[in-house]
Amino acid sequence: MEKLDIVLYPEKGLREICTPVDAMSDELDKLIDDMFYTMYDAPGIGLAAPQVAVQQRVIVVDVSESKDQPIALINPEIIRSAGEITWEEGCLSIPGVYGKVTRPSDILVRGMDRDGKMVEFEANDLLAVCLQHEIDHLNGKLFVDHMSGLKRTRALQKFKKLQQEQTEE
Ligand code: K1U
Ligand code: ZN
Image 1 (tube, rainbow, N blue to C red):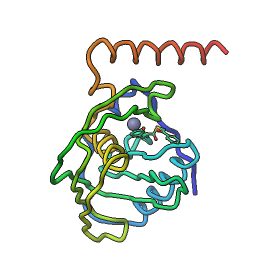
Image 2 (cartoon, helix red, strand yellow):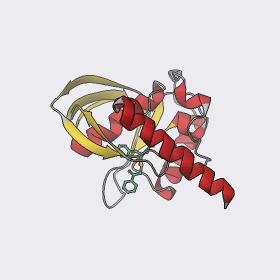
Image 3 (cartoon, rainbow, N blue to C red):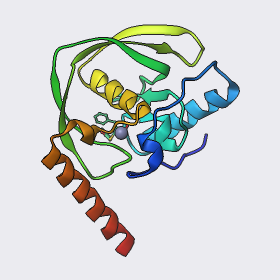
């Protein structure tokens, strides 16, 4: 398995709408393995393909404490959503920045699993938050886009400062 480079804001690819996947392939299977490896190593609870410079509709998530409940979804869609939850989100493409985002707390998700089978399941709370965060990535949307103007500006300023400090080191 290979650890992939995670692209950072403001990389252009993070703002693009990703292309649907036609069918499973060995190449896609390897991408999913590498995305899980990269996500667990980061560490993170989710990762979307554009974060590793692949503009295709593929996500991986694992919100379990034990890190043994991996979910890979290809062409994921949210069929229904209800409720409301506010969560302090982070993003591996904007490291060091966190912010409260309010989203639906209960969703019905559909997509293809890594065996090429169509799956549909309900997700709640953190799993729902994480799936929505990753599906947003496939549509060129970042968690900071859900924040109010001033909070978003401050968060991105903080990120720029952190990046500058890192390059000075
Ligand atoms: O997509 C990403 O950038 C990954 C991101 C997912 C996410 C985090 C929080 C709310 C919604 C979606 C992360 O995994 S950031 C790292 C993180 O949250 C975390 C890392 C280790 C343990 C627990 C959480
Ligand atoms: Zn993210």
